[in-house]
View 1 (cartoon, rainbow, N blue to C red):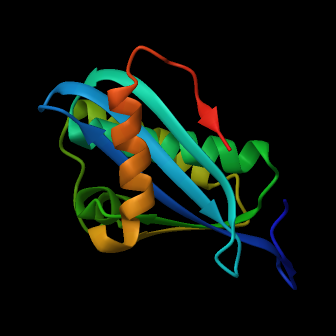
View 2: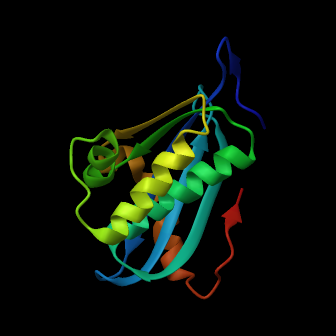
Length: 149
């Protein structure tokens, strides 16, 4: 299924989440890709190893951006319940942690590949499906493949 085309091209809304059991602990990422009418285009769920919740949030963003790029989507709006991630990417918060700084730089680099790419903070209640997918990835941690639907 491809997203509806607007005057600016197809627009895709992406809900992302990262989860870890412990901090650090076993971690997973989830992403849900929706068209402008809210129809699901794809889902992504992946176990990412032992890491912190903040690293898992960045990895969720990176996997989602790579998936969107691979599918040829040029206009994306990313929704995350991680205030830290959203505010670091907007420049409102500084990125002090060295590891997060690397992921932040990679995310900014990937974002430039899109004609339009924005990251917005949303409530956890709006991010339930991505949260569920990230949690499932942790539960299925011995399966390290990316699950796409």
